[in-house]
Image (cartoon, rainbow, N blue to C red; front, side, top):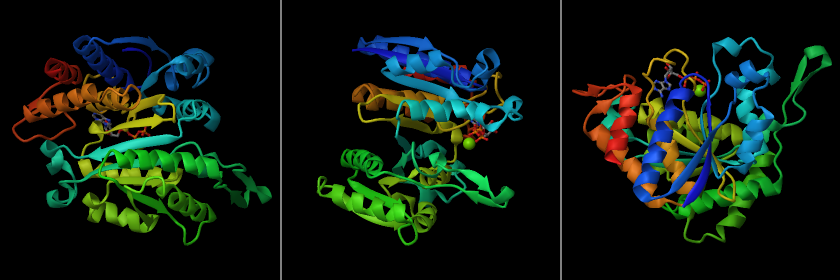
Length: 354
Ligand code: ATP
Ligand code: MG
């Protein structure tokens, strides 16, 4: 199989972890006789410094021609003084919107070797394995108008969704549920929000096309509670942009390690942008300390979701498990009797397994 991948390392540890993930993809290509070609472009703070914009034209053009995109992270304290539209984060929001990557998928699955690191009791988190499907290009974060009125004494943010925007994300969630444990929890606030009432109607309507998937509706406040009291009762969660933002950060706590969580932002034709959930971690950037596993697992999601290479994806996930079983870990993971290694050594261990 021939695929073209655009790399957007971005800022801070984004540089280190995407380099590690690229090496893993190269190892997969070699073992399974695929041809992956790579092209690297700037985004975020790095792009601001060299080209005066967080999302240069050539970056957008390259992404539009790519089969998949692997992103590191954007941002850092040196750009915090810039006005809102010039922030590194605008590069990321912009590319998601321009590419119409409307579905953000975050699998949350604790590795058994690391469950002790969760602030929750082991018996609560063990066995939890869920996928959050968050709508990514609509709702409150993109609502117009978003402004101050009456001489700054009043503010307006708008939560708008079209019927078709809800249909496409709900359909994606049903598809994801179908290949997992076939249970979908739709999270909303239908007791107060009109957008949530339409959301519920769409879910009910769609469920007729997926009779094999069981559906439950849950209010977002109840869902927030249940996520930490009985996380293993969830399989797939589907929700709008802001609820998904909050719930997915909450759910990441279940695994006890930010450095382990991958994510995918995809659209219906399979093109996707893959990135670790963690940020640019300026406090450890450039020290070869960053845990590359979230980026490596994001590359595994790329193999699965954009290229339909299930076996290869599983091979990468298994390689990660084997390395953890051998008690190798980076500085961010507290492993009892473990062997601490650098970020690049960690990547090398994974590649050895592949
Ligand atoms: P952002 O606003 O970009 O999401 P953030 O404030 O959420 O950033 P991160 O950059 O994700 O923060 O970092 C939070 C903490 O976790 C930092 O102390 C950082 O060093 C640590 N951290 C994040 N990612 C990793 C990683 N891959 N390996 C090791 N430590 C990490
Ligand atoms: Mg963050």
